[in-house]
Image: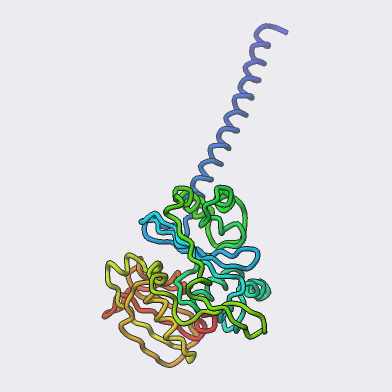
Length: 305
């Protein structure tokens, strides 16, 4: 074989190696780019200021509502025992929290039924939920926070939300974390309808707990809301209570002929989005004259409320 042919073969081999290397790095670059695009565009609920609320359900059936005050750099955990009897959302009747989760699975509703029930029975404006390891975001345990951030479990949080929430939680010290056991200051232990003993809520929650859920945008910029009911089911008072716990002011309630509708929010996009998220409304429309926000709901909404 001549020297020229040997040189040509080496050049071809070198080009092949270089070509394979270029393909590898190109694929790697596309993967990394795609990952970061997915990560940064997959934000659903994380807030860079204000507050974020998470309902977490542990294996034994207890429920915790964690208030992440991003602006104030504090975490408050509100704990409901597993034997707390509640009036379920979606008209399922009275259940203990530890049994309501099994009902949700049987009905195909999933973890959101717990959040909806906290909204319906306790007027808490919550809609983000997590099962299992998700409770770790409110914990002061390093391993629990790590599992909440990186492990897989049922939740409506996105991957981006979990990472950002985890980073925030890691930055909170013990002095900035408070645990409130409602069995000590609000829930009363008594005999329940199934003959066992458990806890029931007595009246409204303490005002200082409701104050944790006030939206700073609503409280700093007084928001007047009109509620329009197109349902025969009498849930106006419950709907109004949730809105007012958020910090807005319901200035008008109008009941008109019922229609098979879900719910629609009319108003400024940012304010309307917050109200729509809490009540699970898909439709947001431009504001009407006279009020900052208008919340309209029909029979379909009433069935799932």
